[in-house]
Length: 170
Image 1 (spheres, one colour):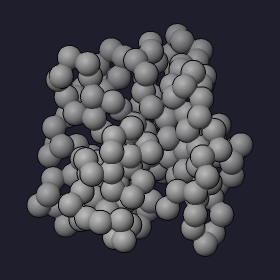
Image 2 (cartoon, one colour; image 1 turned 90 degrees about the vertical axis):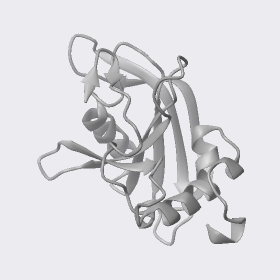
Image 3 (tube, helix red, strand yellow; image 1 turned 60 degrees about the vertical axis):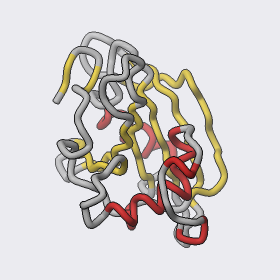
């Protein structure tokens, strides 16, 4: 769902299908932290701006995890997700994981979300929810462990905000 400037805030239960923790690699070194990153946009605006952070992954196969945080510009990250993924994949290669981060609105309405962007065979973006996930969802425990281990680097919250697990359960 969209409204001017981005997505309509959704409750955690109404969000996209949950991602799997297996789709999210462990994070290694932070390579890029650009709070004013310009990206190609759709529509009248030729480009949008968001906060880009890119980590090397700490998995057996080399890769990257790039998070784009919505900063409230004229063009939303969601509307430009396909173009964002294509540009980052050209720079970092096909082993790219792209979560999209939407901070909670300042008005207190809505929820902070983290969604995994996947690109279909036809080039269109599809989203799966990383966080928040309802506790009754079978994927909740695995995603909660990943968020406890790495989510604080993405959303700027302490690790204890995400879990009831200890650091050995990453």
